[in-house]
Image 1 (cartoon, rainbow, N blue to C red):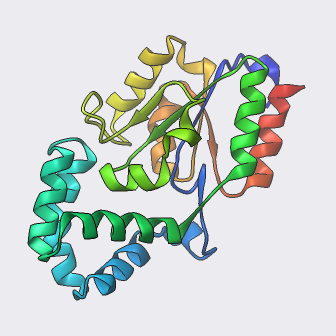
Image 2 (image 1 turned 30 degrees about the vertical axis):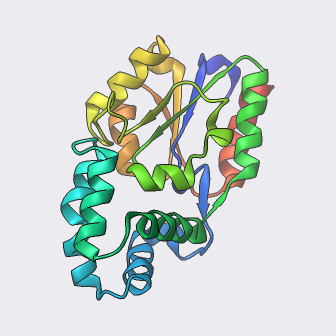
Length: 214
C-alpha cells in the first residue's frame, strides 16, 4: 500500500485489533467463549444459566435497543447480584482477556501527524466499551462509531454502519482504509469500495500502514 492509493482516513476495530487477546489461542477462536465461561464461574452460575440471565439484555444493548441503566439493572436482577458487583466483575474480567495494542496505537498517531484521519468502528455493549475504550485511549480518534451508541444502533456487518462511517468522514469510500480482524466485517466495506486490511498480527498491518508514511 502506498500514498498513491488516495487513502485519507484509516479506521480501526477495537477487539482483536487496537485491543489484543492476551491468549494467542483466542486470535482464531475469539475470546467470547472464554470470557463468558470465566464470568459464569465468577458469579457462581453454570454456563447455561449465565446465558439465560444475560442473553436478551446483552443482545439488545449491543445496538442500544435498551438503555445502559436498564441493561445493567436487568442482568443484575437475573443473576441476583448488585449492579456494582456486576459492573466491577464484568469489566475486570474483560481486562483480563485483552491488552492494549500500544504498537498499533502509536502507528495510528504517526498517521495522524502525517495528516491522515484516524477513526474507530467497533461493536460493543456498554460494559465492554467501558473496559476496552477508556476516554484517554480514544480521544485522538474521530469519528468513533460504536454499535451501542444511541446515535448509532447498528453493528457490523450491517451495510448501514459502513455508510454511517463514510458519511461522518465526508470522504469517498476508496479514500478510507478499514482494519478489522474478521473477514466477514471487511466484506461489506470492500464491496462499497473501501480499502481493507485483515488484522492477523502487528507486523503485517504496521508494514502496510508504514507504506502510507513514505
